[in-house]
Figure 1 (cartoon, one colour):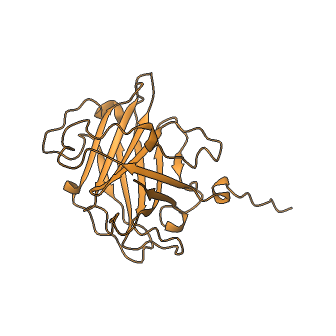
Figure 2: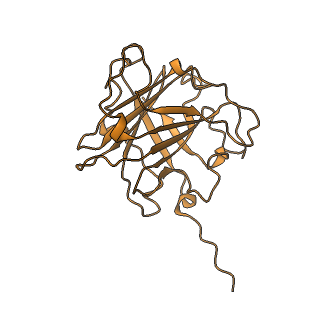
Length: 227
């Protein structure tokens, strides 16, 4: 007997999150800790919750005319666990919903770090990357066209102790890093993320690993930039 096809909860809903205004703007971002606190009003709903998997990190998002900020906050009153934390973020600045292959407006960024090694390391005033955090822009497989490769000076990261222990990681992608980002023209973005850490279930926004989120922008959720 053929087993019934199980439809993931994600496909019963079209998830739409709101990104609210963010400050400070670039110019202030070289100050360590400048990005690491977005208010609860900026929290994103995840797909993990729909699948019955509790979120282990609080994810918040904000925008400005200068770009997009994403903050991952993992509360953990115990000592941070050693091991690689990986964050993948996908952004389509045109929110194309009817094609299955990425365009030049689709981006994937990956940030990896070990919180037991990275937290507490000082960043020089001229650095845009948190010391010890490795950032990559990933070429999207089967893309119709590749997004331009962003200059590292157009991307900021910040890493600090979390609200209740653990860690808080912030990523700011300026409009120079996001091809086609223009809130005056388009306020709807395609958006997805996957967040993994030792001894934790995969936290995600977008379908699970059995679906090709990494290459199909039609599987990404909607992020509305609101005032």
